[in-house]
Length: 97
View (tube, rainbow, N blue to C red):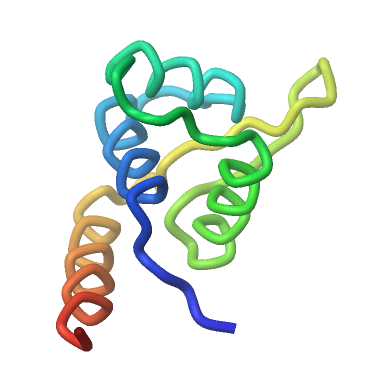
C-alpha cells in the first residue's frame, strides 16, 4: 500500500515542524492545527492516528507512551535528515502527476 501526500498530512507535518521540540498527543496535534487554521476542515482523529503511525513507520517521528497511556509523537531528532527526506518524498509524490 502506497503512502500519499494529502492536505491532512501536510498540515500535520507543518505543525510538527513548528513544534519540533515538543512531544505531542494526537489530540494536541489536532487542537493545535484547528487553532492555527479555524476556517479549514478539521482533521479526523482516526486520520491523524493513521498519519502519525505512517510517519513513525517512515522514521520521521518517534512514538512513546506517557503515564496516561497516551501515545506521544515527536519529529525525529535529526531535523536536517527529516527535511531532506520529506522534500524528496514530497517531490516524488507530486511529480508523478
